[in-house]
Image (cartoon, rainbow, N blue to C red; front, side, top):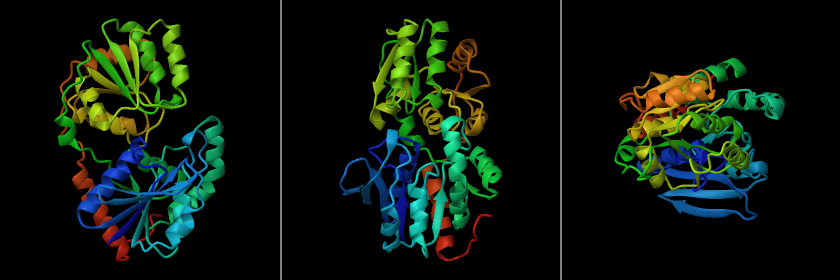
Length: 354
């Protein structure tokens, strides 16, 4: 089967959608499918390469703050492709819409990684975009949600009934990690540095945790504000910004941490808690949106408030917990389920999810 994946970004760009699309694409390629990825670049030229038997084409995009990725050229490229299936990802970026417009007679599967409505400027943009986004989702042969929380949001906002297939985790790969040797007990935050990820609340809690350091990985536009917060609280010797790290180093950082913590305002899944648990390290999450799903896993503590005392208490509690990976979905199982959907869609055995 010829499968075309469309994603706002693709590795070496980092993020949950990026890792999702690569993990799925590479496994499908190993199973003998002809897999291509159409994605974006902030450069001015098209780029083509092959990564682990997956053909990757990057198209120039207008992407302020590396978001939205306005790329009309995707439509004709999809239209003139020879794909049997188009699988587009990322509701909150334009490639999904342009891919659907270009698909025409090609069956489409959409995984929106939908974060729901937001407040402020994003909330206004969301309301303006919602009619277009809704039509796009309802036009698909199948919509896949990666969590119960995302499914509920999609149902409430668009009246569709998606199929729930969680993100996969390469449990064996993470569990084989050698713990990072930092020399001191540390907490880990691994995410893009944006305000809604809640890293600022972890920094605040460090004033209540004299025996812990904090390692923060990732890059993003909120880094300066986080750095200022560290200086204001006199925590320069307790907080380390590691920036971008390789996936191999990230799994080592997971394995060596006392706990990993993610206090996001919203997540459609929350990949890093699963990766941390797979590496044998307990996690603290904010009990909101899809992160609430993780509190059912052994080794996870969910908090309903993000004040320093509550977060610090949760970190102390979590660091004493044992971890189980029994409930975590493996990538091979996820690929099985999505491959089955492709076959059904290609054989016209499913109808639109509304």
